[in-house]
Length: 337
Image (cartoon, rainbow, N blue to C red):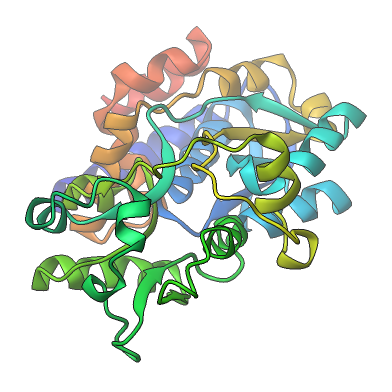
């Protein structure tokens, strides 16, 4: 970590120097700092670059999919949601896009991403017959719940995450309760990760939701399951599966919808930020492989978003240099190297 601290000090001095000659004064802005690692990293990268290169004064505020969208939609804050997974909010988000109150600054800020249901590699190897979700659902006995071993445990999403609604509705769509399954709320991101890691370490079976790119999927080489059924259409997903249970009376079995992530900004921010800042956000694309590397770095070094963002800027100029205008990139690069 010594080198990282030296790099951080060097970059900190660089940012102070760079900020005195910023190209634009975009003013006070808020960025959602997501409660998952990739979103935390992205928010801190944006903070450093927007302050250093473009003269913004950035405040990071806690972010979660549904609550952040609701706040942006109803209150116009925060200004930027860097990694908004839109499946849970697609209909109201599209309405906001149509109304011009919110804008997509980037329709693919991370490549090679996706959500779904996973099992560990040792489970897939020991039970090659488990090729699809439908296969797994016939074997709750292989995934006993800790509190009630007579039930199979399906690990869903923590409360407040957008994916919580989809997993709960798919649990109903596949009639999992009648098949002997229990839907388990892991309580937090740490609880979700901990349940997977514990199973891997003990070579126990695990079945649940996760997404990629993430350090957990890359580190543990988790196996993503085909659902064994086709995607049942946008009306079923957007109009039912992605909604609260009271608004989804009859969810149909379906494969997971194609994951879609956007960087979303408010109309007020778009107007005041200027074309150079919007151009940066449009070009800011993290390759999935690089993102996985950074997430493993965060886990191995217990690094928070700020430290990870500095490490990224120090180590991956080839990735981020092209995101900026020539003058802005020089201000950061000249001091980092």
